[in-house]
Length: 198
Image (cartoon, rainbow, N blue to C red; front, side, top):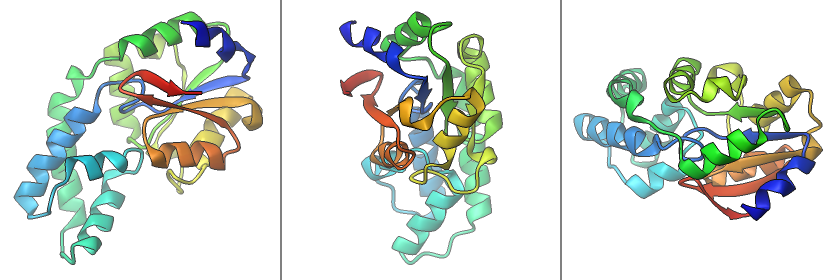
């Protein structure tokens, strides 16, 4: 891949996890669809996909307010997470992203900045084997201001000892790209493992 050599100019490569590195978004969305039906929340798969990077509880609160519904946010989040965790080990790494990670391992520091809770993210990294390649993980539990705020990516850069202005963020959502730009980082849109633009 010609672009990959260009990535070695960066202090660090920072990846979103769900939908960027790992094919887990369909599993999340399936859990959302089931839970939404149970709680009477209108479900739009495309709209929900755009909220990637924001923790479940925050998304439920946003959607409930949009639709003028009173929903037990904690109960909804617990149910959605339970359904997702039943399927989590089915998540796999997108082949193109695996190639990129392996090619840059030991050459460019790499980290993950995700809107998923730490226990879910660590489980995916272990089950896919990504944990052998990427040691720095910043999860939803590690920051207060989630994407589109820059905090997640800035924390990854800090832990990697990298200058944010020379980091490259791989993201699959508009909200994630906003977070990368807010952090002063270069961004790449990676949809289902395919790099769309640099």
